[in-house]
Length: 253
Image 1: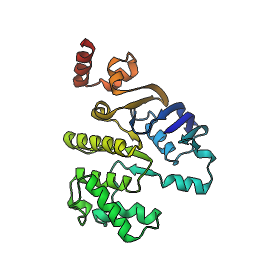
Image 2: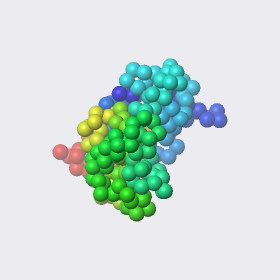
Image 3: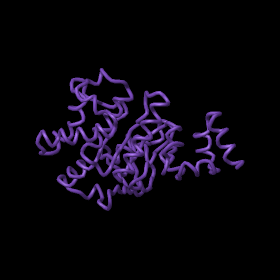
Protein backbone atom coordinates (compact mmCIF):
# COMPACT_ATOMS: atom_id res chain seq x y z
CA UNK A 1 0.00 0.00 0.00
CA UNK A 2 1.17 3.51 -0.80
CA UNK A 3 -0.42 6.38 1.10
CA UNK A 4 0.00 10.03 0.23
CA UNK A 5 -1.15 12.75 2.58
CA UNK A 6 -1.71 16.37 1.58
CA UNK A 7 1.25 16.59 -0.79
CA UNK A 8 2.07 19.88 -2.46
CA UNK A 9 4.66 20.49 -5.15
CA UNK A 10 5.61 23.75 -6.87
CA UNK A 11 7.92 24.77 -9.69
CA UNK A 12 9.03 28.36 -10.17
CA UNK A 13 6.52 29.55 -7.61
CA UNK A 14 3.62 27.83 -9.40
CA UNK A 15 1.86 25.16 -7.35
CA UNK A 16 1.34 22.01 -9.42
CA UNK A 17 0.03 19.64 -6.74
CA UNK A 18 -2.34 21.23 -4.25
CA UNK A 19 -2.82 19.05 -1.20
CA UNK A 20 -3.41 15.67 -2.86
CA UNK A 21 -4.24 12.74 -0.58
CA UNK A 22 -5.12 9.16 -1.49
CA UNK A 23 -4.30 5.49 -0.91
CA UNK A 24 -3.02 3.20 -3.65
CA UNK A 25 -4.13 -0.28 -2.66
CA UNK A 26 -2.08 -3.48 -2.84
CA UNK A 27 -3.21 -6.09 -5.35
CA UNK A 28 -5.21 -3.56 -7.35
CA UNK A 29 -4.65 -1.47 -10.45
CA UNK A 30 -4.61 2.15 -9.26
CA UNK A 31 -5.00 4.67 -12.09
CA UNK A 32 -4.12 8.37 -12.17
CA UNK A 33 -6.02 10.21 -14.89
CA UNK A 34 -6.39 13.84 -15.93
CA UNK A 35 -5.77 16.27 -18.74
CA UNK A 36 -2.31 17.48 -19.71
CA UNK A 37 -1.10 19.87 -17.03
CA UNK A 38 -3.33 18.35 -14.35
CA UNK A 39 -0.35 17.24 -12.26
CA UNK A 40 -0.49 13.49 -12.84
CA UNK A 41 3.09 13.19 -14.14
CA UNK A 42 4.40 15.30 -11.25
CA UNK A 43 2.50 13.04 -8.86
CA UNK A 44 4.01 9.91 -10.40
CA UNK A 45 7.52 11.39 -10.25
CA UNK A 46 6.93 12.36 -6.62
CA UNK A 47 6.01 8.75 -5.84
CA UNK A 48 9.25 7.65 -7.53
CA UNK A 49 11.32 10.09 -5.47
CA UNK A 50 12.31 12.14 -8.52
CA UNK A 51 10.44 15.17 -7.14
CA UNK A 52 10.33 16.09 -3.45
CA UNK A 53 7.04 17.62 -2.28
CA UNK A 54 7.36 20.75 -0.13
CA UNK A 55 4.40 19.67 2.01
CA UNK A 56 2.89 16.30 2.93
CA UNK A 57 4.11 12.71 3.14
CA UNK A 58 4.39 9.64 0.94
CA UNK A 59 4.57 6.31 2.75
CA UNK A 60 5.26 2.81 1.42
CA UNK A 61 3.62 0.25 3.70
CA UNK A 62 4.10 2.58 6.64
CA UNK A 63 7.59 3.80 5.69
CA UNK A 64 7.53 7.57 5.22
CA UNK A 65 9.88 8.25 2.33
CA UNK A 66 11.17 11.59 3.62
CA UNK A 67 12.13 9.95 6.93
CA UNK A 68 14.31 7.27 5.35
CA UNK A 69 18.09 7.55 5.27
CA UNK A 70 20.06 7.02 2.06
CA UNK A 71 20.53 3.28 2.64
CA UNK A 72 16.83 2.79 3.39
CA UNK A 73 15.87 4.74 0.26
CA UNK A 74 18.23 2.60 -1.79
CA UNK A 75 16.64 -0.54 -0.34
CA UNK A 76 13.17 0.79 -1.17
CA UNK A 77 14.20 1.41 -4.77
CA UNK A 78 15.04 -2.30 -5.14
CA UNK A 79 11.36 -2.99 -4.34
CA UNK A 80 10.13 -0.80 -7.23
CA UNK A 81 9.50 -1.80 -10.83
CA UNK A 82 9.02 0.84 -13.54
CA UNK A 83 7.34 0.54 -16.92
CA UNK A 84 8.31 3.57 -19.01
CA UNK A 85 6.12 5.20 -21.65
CA UNK A 86 8.35 4.27 -24.58
CA UNK A 87 9.47 0.92 -23.10
CA UNK A 88 13.02 2.39 -22.80
CA UNK A 89 14.78 -0.78 -23.86
CA UNK A 90 18.51 -0.75 -24.62
CA UNK A 91 18.84 -1.02 -28.41
CA UNK A 92 22.19 -2.81 -28.27
CA UNK A 93 21.01 -5.45 -25.77
CA UNK A 94 19.04 -8.58 -26.54
CA UNK A 95 15.63 -9.18 -24.97
CA UNK A 96 17.25 -11.44 -22.37
CA UNK A 97 19.95 -8.90 -21.55
CA UNK A 98 17.39 -6.11 -21.22
CA UNK A 99 15.26 -8.10 -18.79
CA UNK A 100 18.25 -9.19 -16.71
CA UNK A 101 19.69 -5.67 -16.45
CA UNK A 102 18.11 -4.76 -13.06
CA UNK A 103 19.37 -8.00 -11.53
CA UNK A 104 22.91 -7.36 -12.76
CA UNK A 105 22.74 -3.81 -11.43
CA UNK A 106 21.09 -4.31 -8.06
CA UNK A 107 21.82 -7.87 -6.93
CA UNK A 108 24.82 -10.11 -6.41
CA UNK A 109 23.14 -13.09 -8.03
CA UNK A 110 25.32 -15.27 -10.25
CA UNK A 111 24.63 -15.49 -13.98
CA UNK A 112 22.80 -18.81 -13.70
CA UNK A 113 20.35 -17.50 -11.09
CA UNK A 114 19.81 -14.35 -13.14
CA UNK A 115 19.12 -16.37 -16.28
CA UNK A 116 16.64 -18.59 -14.42
CA UNK A 117 14.73 -15.52 -13.28
CA UNK A 118 14.85 -13.97 -16.77
CA UNK A 119 13.49 -17.21 -18.26
CA UNK A 120 10.70 -17.25 -15.67
CA UNK A 121 9.43 -13.72 -16.34
CA UNK A 122 9.77 -14.01 -20.12
CA UNK A 123 7.65 -17.15 -19.95
CA UNK A 124 5.13 -15.22 -17.83
CA UNK A 125 4.73 -12.58 -20.56
CA UNK A 126 4.71 -15.23 -23.31
CA UNK A 127 8.06 -14.29 -24.86
CA UNK A 128 10.14 -17.34 -24.09
CA UNK A 129 11.31 -17.69 -27.71
CA UNK A 130 12.60 -14.11 -28.02
CA UNK A 131 15.71 -14.25 -25.82
CA UNK A 132 18.29 -13.45 -28.48
CA UNK A 133 16.34 -10.89 -30.48
CA UNK A 134 17.10 -7.18 -30.38
CA UNK A 135 14.32 -4.66 -29.63
CA UNK A 136 14.37 -3.54 -33.28
CA UNK A 137 13.51 -7.09 -34.33
CA UNK A 138 10.24 -7.33 -32.40
CA UNK A 139 6.93 -5.46 -32.55
CA UNK A 140 5.89 -2.55 -30.34
CA UNK A 141 3.56 -4.79 -28.34
CA UNK A 142 6.34 -7.33 -27.79
CA UNK A 143 8.68 -4.53 -26.71
CA UNK A 144 6.11 -3.48 -24.14
CA UNK A 145 5.92 -7.05 -22.83
CA UNK A 146 9.72 -7.14 -22.57
CA UNK A 147 9.53 -3.89 -20.58
CA UNK A 148 6.93 -5.45 -18.27
CA UNK A 149 9.16 -8.49 -17.78
CA UNK A 150 12.06 -6.20 -16.89
CA UNK A 151 9.87 -4.25 -14.48
CA UNK A 152 8.89 -7.37 -12.54
CA UNK A 153 12.15 -9.34 -12.78
CA UNK A 154 13.25 -8.18 -9.31
CA UNK A 155 9.90 -9.26 -7.83
CA UNK A 156 8.83 -5.72 -6.88
CA UNK A 157 6.32 -4.74 -4.22
CA UNK A 158 5.44 -1.60 -6.18
CA UNK A 159 4.97 -1.23 -9.94
CA UNK A 160 4.71 2.16 -11.64
CA UNK A 161 3.51 2.44 -15.24
CA UNK A 162 3.72 5.65 -17.27
CA UNK A 163 1.27 5.63 -20.20
CA UNK A 164 1.78 1.88 -20.82
CA UNK A 165 -0.42 1.88 -23.93
CA UNK A 166 1.23 4.79 -25.68
CA UNK A 167 1.71 4.04 -29.40
CA UNK A 168 -0.12 0.71 -29.34
CA UNK A 169 -3.12 -0.32 -31.40
CA UNK A 170 -6.37 -0.92 -29.44
CA UNK A 171 -6.14 -4.72 -29.43
CA UNK A 172 -2.53 -4.74 -28.24
CA UNK A 173 -3.33 -2.05 -25.66
CA UNK A 174 -6.05 -4.26 -24.21
CA UNK A 175 -3.63 -7.20 -24.03
CA UNK A 176 -1.10 -5.04 -22.15
CA UNK A 177 -3.82 -3.77 -19.78
CA UNK A 178 -4.91 -7.29 -18.98
CA UNK A 179 -1.33 -8.48 -18.51
CA UNK A 180 -0.61 -5.68 -16.03
CA UNK A 181 -3.79 -6.48 -14.12
CA UNK A 182 -3.04 -10.21 -14.04
CA UNK A 183 0.51 -9.64 -12.78
CA UNK A 184 -0.74 -7.18 -10.16
CA UNK A 185 -3.15 -9.75 -8.75
CA UNK A 186 -0.84 -12.74 -9.17
CA UNK A 187 2.08 -11.18 -7.30
CA UNK A 188 0.00 -8.91 -5.02
CA UNK A 189 1.75 -5.76 -6.21
CA UNK A 190 0.77 -2.16 -5.52
CA UNK A 191 0.43 -0.97 -9.11
CA UNK A 192 0.07 2.71 -10.04
CA UNK A 193 -0.68 3.61 -13.66
CA UNK A 194 -0.51 7.10 -15.14
CA UNK A 195 -2.77 7.09 -18.21
CA UNK A 196 -4.97 9.15 -20.49
CA UNK A 197 -6.43 6.06 -22.17
CA UNK A 198 -10.12 5.81 -21.28
CA UNK A 199 -10.23 2.24 -22.57
CA UNK A 200 -7.73 1.37 -19.82
CA UNK A 201 -9.93 3.13 -17.28
CA UNK A 202 -12.94 1.06 -18.30
CA UNK A 203 -10.97 -2.19 -18.59
CA UNK A 204 -8.86 -2.25 -15.41
CA UNK A 205 -9.75 0.84 -13.34
CA UNK A 206 -10.15 -0.72 -9.90
CA UNK A 207 -9.14 2.44 -8.06
CA UNK A 208 -9.04 5.72 -10.00
CA UNK A 209 -8.07 9.23 -9.00
CA UNK A 210 -8.86 12.13 -11.31
CA UNK A 211 -6.66 15.21 -11.07
CA UNK A 212 -7.67 18.64 -12.31
CA UNK A 213 -5.48 21.72 -11.92
CA UNK A 214 -3.40 19.98 -9.26
CA UNK A 215 -6.37 18.93 -7.13
CA UNK A 216 -7.88 15.50 -6.60
CA UNK A 217 -11.22 16.23 -8.20
CA UNK A 218 -12.70 12.73 -7.95
CA UNK A 219 -11.86 9.21 -6.75
CA UNK A 220 -13.63 5.90 -7.30
CA UNK A 221 -13.90 2.74 -9.39
CA UNK A 222 -14.68 2.22 -13.07
CA UNK A 223 -18.23 1.26 -12.08
CA UNK A 224 -18.68 4.44 -10.07
CA UNK A 225 -17.64 6.56 -13.04
CA UNK A 226 -20.89 5.55 -14.74
CA UNK A 227 -22.96 6.85 -11.82
CA UNK A 228 -21.06 9.98 -10.79
CA UNK A 229 -22.60 13.41 -11.19
CA UNK A 230 -19.21 15.14 -10.91
CA UNK A 231 -19.29 17.44 -13.94
CA UNK A 232 -15.50 17.62 -14.34
CA UNK A 233 -14.94 13.89 -14.70
CA UNK A 234 -18.10 13.39 -16.76
CA UNK A 235 -16.78 15.97 -19.25
CA UNK A 236 -13.33 14.38 -19.24
CA UNK A 237 -14.27 10.73 -19.54
CA UNK A 238 -17.31 11.11 -21.78
CA UNK A 239 -15.88 13.53 -24.31
CA UNK A 240 -16.31 10.84 -26.96
CA UNK A 241 -19.75 9.83 -28.23
CA UNK A 242 -18.94 6.16 -27.60
CA UNK A 243 -18.48 6.59 -23.86
CA UNK A 244 -21.51 8.87 -23.69
CA UNK A 245 -23.63 6.09 -25.17
CA UNK A 246 -22.13 3.53 -22.79
CA UNK A 247 -22.95 5.72 -19.79
CA UNK A 248 -26.48 6.42 -21.00
CA UNK A 249 -27.11 2.70 -21.47
CA UNK A 250 -25.69 1.93 -18.02
CA UNK A 251 -27.87 4.52 -16.28
CA UNK A 252 -31.00 3.12 -17.98
CA UNK A 253 -30.42 -0.33 -16.47
